[in-house]
Amino acid sequence: MSIVLLHTAVSADQQGQTVPAEIKQYLEQRGLQITVTAADVKKTGYILVLGTANGDKVAAKRAATVTAQRAMVSLLAELPSSKGKAGKQVVRTPPVTKTRVSGTVRRATPLFSYYDSLHETMYLLLQKPVAVP
Image (cartoon, rainbow, N blue to C red; front, side):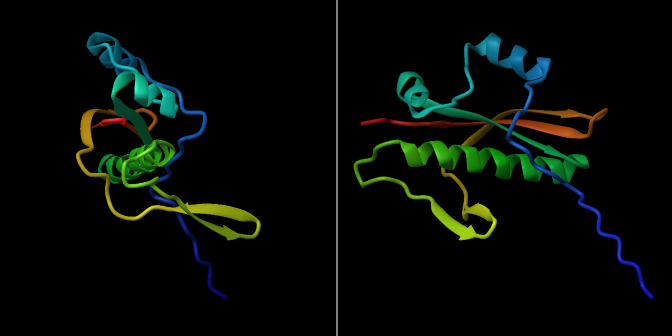
């Protein structure tokens, strides 16, 4: 008899995230706001998202970057474009629907990152300038 233990080293969760005081302070000092809808993008001229992930510092930073890029792609897909509309590829697998994202978002710049060592959580702000037609 053999026992296999699987341990998840990193988890990334975008839903219900709380913004730590360090991130709020950074945003307030620079007059920035996290982008939630396409209307926010049209108003501000940029997409600013917060990626979060749990785990050791290096792995959590990678996962937070992926989480932020997924959030950014989701907002980009809602914006009109001169070349048409960005598309999401949705794969339906019972009982879960997954969204597949590949590649990276061009000209997306990490603005600020903060690692909470007590909770082993990485917070990463990622920004992309957007020209909305």
